[in-house]
Amino acid sequence: QVMPLKKQQEVEVYVPHVAQVAERDAEALRDEDLFWPYLSLGRFLDNQAAFDEALGWYERGLQLCGERLGPNHPDTAKSLNNMATRLYTMNRLAEAEPLMERALAIAEASLGHDHPQVAGHLNNLAQLLQATNRLSDAEPLMRRALTIDEARDRKSTRLNSSHSSVSRMPSSA
Image (cartoon, rainbow, N blue to C red):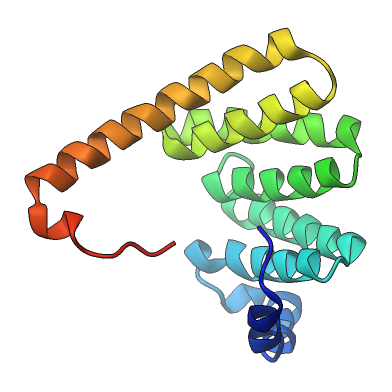
């Protein structure tokens, strides 16, 4: 996701502070917050086209999530996915694929086969398979991701229609 230049300039002042937390104060972070500094730094650097440096932050986040939260934690899966996505965009597909497969397996086991995060992992792996011309392998993954997304959308529509005041509230991303 590309960050507009103005937004990059606004958040740039915070980058050294986030880096300090990630480098020196990670042990003070709550488990549910451990993932975020590494994701934030990686994405910021991605937007600066500093891809190798971004990959380093994704790797460090994966290492810490795996050590502290365990190899089967959903945040470990997200860290794997972030690292794999960076490798994918760097055209290091052979390295990205096993990470995406592992992230998907962890997400399915920890969140359930129909969780929205699983759909994201399915889609990412399907995109990689498509990029490597394995369309027959990619298609079922894309179909599964679409089924999960459609089920979520139907559930959201039912919820919004049963709570009309909610459906009129602006949404934030």
